[in-house]
Image 1 (cartoon, rainbow, N blue to C red):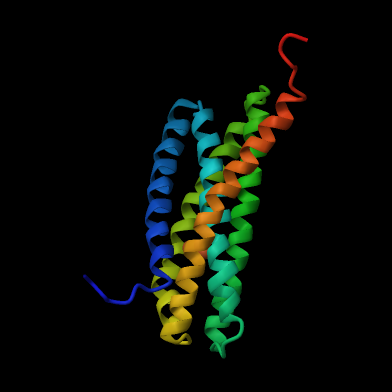
Image 2 (image 1 turned 135 degrees about the vertical axis):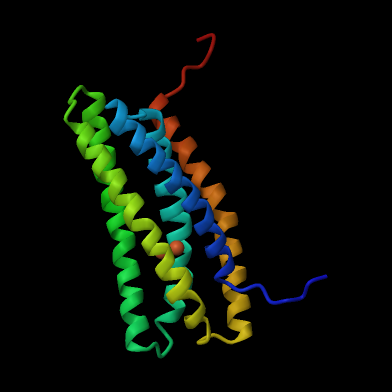
Length: 192
Ligand SMILES: [Fe+2]
Ligand SMILES: [Fe+2]
């Protein structure tokens, strides 16, 4: 059995690879929307769900809620502290751009053809900024800052990340059902 230590940034880096794959699809879809002047509305919904659920709540949730939280107790260099602030601000920027995309899509569906330009602009913004954000974390932040943690602290973080994932999936689908229950309204009792 391989007993090499598994770093707490490893799951985050693995998640980056999936985010990159979705970014690549977003690039293709942006190109198609530009060429045809017809956005793939079903894909926009899927991309928004992916960004909000996977990239933001799950992935940024672990970055900010576990790694960055623990780093605030460490004597970070001025440069790393600044980088961490930038990363948090970039998460917020991603969230704002996604909200802008959702609003543009609604306007497009309601018949406002001009909203297409806004949809394409949001996709351009996301596909441009996200890979740079990932590179900053992968190449310039995650590994150097790990030096602030003992092996035990890293193992604890890794265990907390796994617990976060486990709870996340149940919490997420619990909320999905709750949302649809509200949408469906009070159920009728058959036969009454
Ligand atoms: Fe991040
Ligand atoms: Fe990340």
